[in-house]
Image (cartoon, rainbow, N blue to C red; front, side):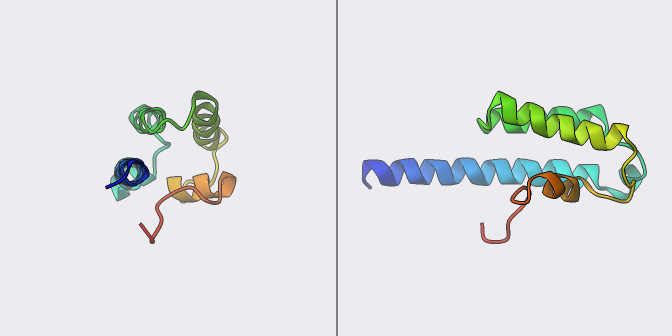
Length: 99
């Protein structure tokens, strides 16, 4: 396995780990018992931690977290889920089927 193949394999594993963490965060946030409530601090903290550990960058992480908190604060549709909220601002966000 060449140098670039090792880098590609490493990036693929990192992406998969992030997607799995993101899916877990969203799945917990969208449990029926929690959907009627605003996004809680634990969910926001978990999302922020996942973004920072995935090296998304501080500025992008702040923007994403701010958007999630804005949805919570401004009383957007309570039936709207976390994923659709992210998709409304970042169309490529969220789980992908081709991974």
